Length: 70
Image (cartoon, rainbow, N blue to C red; front, top):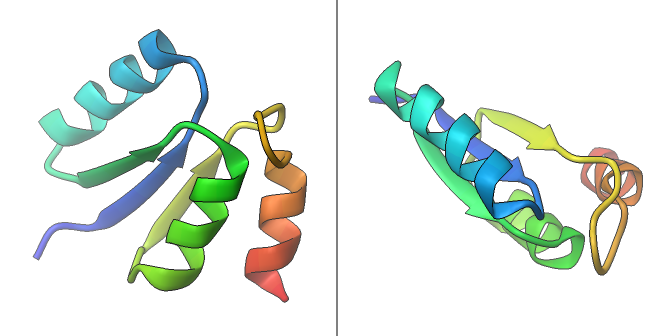
């Protein structure tokens, strides 16, 4: 079973570049484009790794991290 990664990145070109590279290495990648949706996915989905941008619309990456770790 592939490692599941949640990538929270609001820049489409950056997220596409990272996603492509990770998928080429065999990872299963889900992308969220804002902090609010990223937090929702991080708390509801079974993920192995969370990659967060710090400056995001809706909610900062640091706030998402705090909520996930709580």
